[in-house]
Length: 406
Image (cartoon, rainbow, N blue to C red; front, side, top):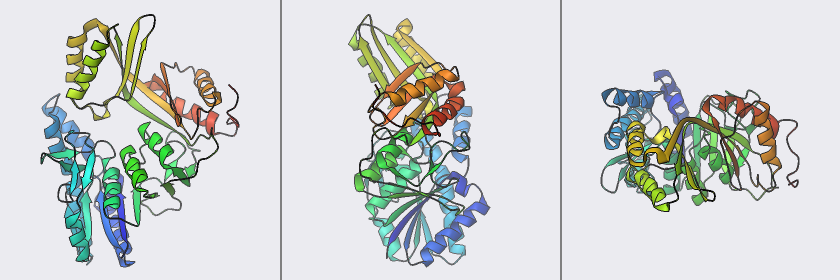
């Protein structure tokens, strides 16, 4: 039989009624003759609530203990869904990430999957059971419970699909696929019927929350097509897969993020930059963008996302004591990004983006580009307006039609 891997996000299992609806969908998939593996996120806002609880205990909770705490949310979801299926006469069993054979590195709060050993899953599928797996978590080679960072349940699903040689990986959420922008910010955003791995990965890295960047990376490496659908069963989906190269300059979508920090290090010595980076490595904290220049005074700038930095207060204090006035920190920032294959083949898209932000009086504090992305660093308070302005300028009826003008 074909193996189908389905992933249901937190909104899809937010309460008992929604869990029952998911159970019906899973049971129907099983009734069609498929072997089914289901990956679930924590119910609704459970992860945020647990994180808030930890911060009520201490301002700087230990990352290992955070993983122990936060991984409980998915275990609740998996057990309840398994109960709902068994009550319907559909044999099901629930597994944690470690029981499923998901092996990670030892980076607490933002671990990466290094291997999947799905022996127990294979055994239970052979017995005719639906297997429910807790997303977002695994076990390190040191036998420690780890979590995979924001959107980690997507990564769990794709990694399992690859390890099980599944026919499909279906990602269910409260939206019917991937849109050209967040529909909550841009009501006329368009659903994309298909998108390349590279474009989807850039969208995810830039803040789009439909799919996780590491999950897309897994899918790309293994050639797994991802089907992003609405849990409600409404029409439409987005297929993420490998496509032939397209004409350069096409803008696929606009993404945004907040909770960014800009660290500016003014020093002529590269040893100071090495010391700064070592401080982040010691806490297993990743930066997003790094710029260094040695002209008219050496200067290094690092952009950091606070989403996976639970101990930012302590880290900020440590950095202040270590670097003093050499390090300036600004933590009220956001970014808006335009994504598309060959988006910077010329400068028209960048010029159009800058004109759009000038039109709403949004100050640009930094620019970063790649062959797939234009990212603009701005005040966090202007992010929503900037998303709408860029979408209108780059994806509206008056979007640029060529990129050859320099």
